[in-house]
Length: 213
Length: 269
Image 1 (cartoon, rainbow over the protein chains, first blue to last red):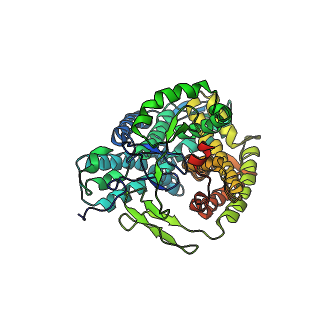
Image 2 (cartoon, each protein chain N blue to C red):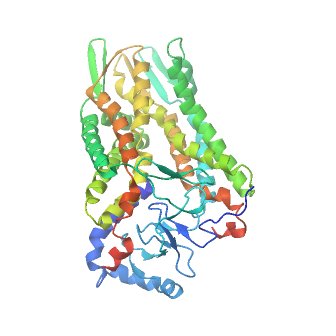
Image 3 (cartoon, each protein chain N blue to C red):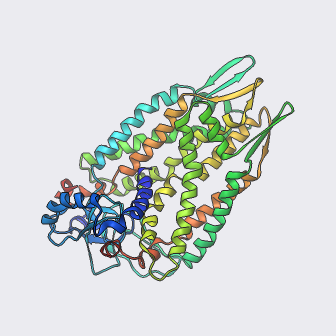
């Protein structure tokens, strides 16, 4: 797409992620510490692809019980009623309450699945050495980084619903087993985003140095 | 989260080990023996006890040009221009914002961090939501939400809620206060660098604004079958969302990094 650019790695330099200082590793070393802030430096995040895949697969595995198991159980005099995330969305849907329902739908169902799909796409294109649409891909990464935290909304909704509705013996709400898996999906995808190194997107374009990471 | 623990460990380890490092710390003596091989390879690498206590740090060599940066998202090497306050520099290749210079950064951040600290205390220690139904009233705080979750047998999720809604925001504000106060000195000491390094992690896991949305959804959901009474903490949280965002936005880390005492120099002392 573009001519090989002068990246820090091709010039044998390392930029610090914490303080931004660019420094040169001592001769013969691939890793070192930043002389200014002491953070560990390497050319690329270590084992970035493997770690991202691992977190992502774990998240995908948790995604199934997160959606199948109930997240809230309502206990009333007439019995117990368990709702999954999707059932919660449907229950919230009413002529006046639909914006709320939409918030939960987007935050709890669309964001996590879109996040997993986007990261899989990024990983696959990086591994295939794609040089296409680098700018769009790094934008996608930033978007995933930015909106990922919002899927925690459902965890908070269920926490405070359960904490507040404690009117035994009339009615009480308990968190269900799905909540743990749902929280796990959020945390694991956040860790996956953190371990992915967006600089890998550009490495295919800048030549043969990719393998050094 | 792991790096946050590492930050705490770094601070503790430093207090514990530094006085002994030069002469008698056996942990470091053993580590130095292991590190000897690395020393051969890196002939000019200065190997010292690092602040984490048991690792050996081989410091990279700095470059003479301090304005050089590598884009964190595409690694393009570039030179930052001088900016007027309010202006920002972006990477020409991937459009990542590399630096935004802030006006009066330290003073404004200090003011906002103090405000955030007060709001954070209020938000956590007074009732947030109340519920009134069939002649009974019940109130809960943020902490109470996590506690109820714990009692219902969801300990892990309770821990996560407590961490993202109480601990991480408190650390985020506390770190920021300490950083800004430490940076008032002409040459900010080494611990400011440690806090500054881990501050972005605390910001990542601090989810006050997400919790706020969650609380509002829960509130409207419950309002269908009971009367919900918003507490003082709810308003404090609402304000905290904006104050925190403003605090993050007014802070310019480069201003502190430019003056900080280098880790290399701290170790050599």
